[in-house]
Every structure is written in C-alpha cells, then in structure tokens.
Image (cartoon, rainbow, N blue to C red; front, side, top):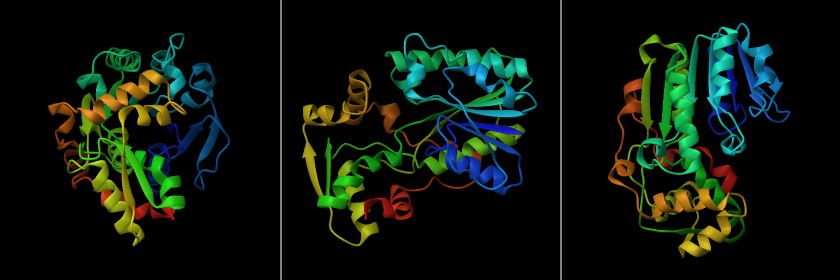
Length: 279
C-alpha cells in the first residue's frame, strides 16, 4: 500500500489518480473530506499531528510527504513524520521539498524543509527528495481576473523562471515511489524553458482563444495582494525569486526527462489542460 499526503492538491491529486490507475493500493490523506478515485481509501488527517497517520502507515510500503504551510510554524515538528514512518515499517519515503533549500538557504521555511530532508537521509529508509522550482499552477492566482476582466496582473513582467507543471512532479514522484533506480537521490524539477509572466499571459490567451491584457504591478502592489493569503515573509521570499532569480533558479534541469524518459511539459500545455479555470 502507498500513502499519499496532500492528496487533493496540485501534485497529490494526479499522483493518487496515476497510482490507482496503475493498479496500486493507495490511501489518500488530506486535511478535509474529499472525493478520491474509485478503489482509493481516504483518511482525513493533519500532518501537524502525525500520530493520526499511524493506522495507515502500518502496513504501507511507501509514503509521499507533502508538508502544508502550518508545518513550517516555529512550534511544528514535521521531521517527526519521518520517524513515525520508519517505526511503522514503511520502506520508502518520497519528500516534496523545494528548490529554495539549495538556492536560498536562509528563511524559516527553507531551514525547516532542510531539517526534514536531513531527517529522511538519516532515517535508514529508502528515500528520494524532489525540489521543484516555481509551479505552473501558480498562474491560477490570475484566474479570477482573467475570467472577470481579461487581465493578468503581476510584477516583473519580463523576468522569467522555468516553471514546472505539477503533473510532471507527480510523474517523477510516482517513479520514485515505485522504481528502485530512483532511490537515495535529489531531483531538481523545472519546466523545459524560462518563461516570463507576460509570456504566460500570452499562453493563457492562446488557450482561451481570446485576448488577455498584461498589467505590470509594482513589488509593493504585488506584496499587498499576496499577503492576503500568504505570510509576509513567504511573500517577500517569493518576490525575491521572481524579481531576481539566481543562475541556479534559471537553470533548466534535466531531471524530469532523466526520470520519466520524456521532456517536461510546457506552460502552454498546462494552460491548455487547465483553460476551464480561466473561462
């Protein structure tokens, strides 16, 4: 049995579906009640209370770990999840980490995630760490403004990074959960090319078949909008990367192709598959 945490999110949902379609026994864990594919068990669980996972970890052979934002709080102990998995007899853990662990080493969230990575390496389990850069699905932040006004509003319109399709992250995660060739490794996951916010707006317009205007925000305007849903520290971290990506954050990684045997999906492909969100 394979346990997938964060099973209703942009990565966990396609991962759960793909595992189930391949005939694997899967338990999907999410913080709220949710629909899951036929044949998949579901557990409402909060990773901030990892003891609640014990019933599904016992007897599981592999675990996919996706940490929610509250597990980066000062009092949280997300590394305990790794210890409980080992104690329950889980053989392999795949951790969704972040590119920032390597490229931006300061900051609470990255320090916390690095601690979880270290705990996993030292656990004696088979492991894989996935470090994606920016997600293509972050464009969903613009869905409401595109639907209502035909506008994408974002800062740093002509500064790009190689955003990754969450479906590619799910495909790499599946390979790491199932294939012995992909254990004890760190995988940096990006899309196939650097793409700017202005170019993303053009790709969304092409998917819709109708114009989308790009409005460039100042950093302060963008931070004000982001802090409606994100902590100010995380908003600043994100804007630092978007406004001034390092050479490492601009690099197109070969790891999606190395693991899956195919090129990573483009942002245009993501936009075409998710165009309903923008209509």
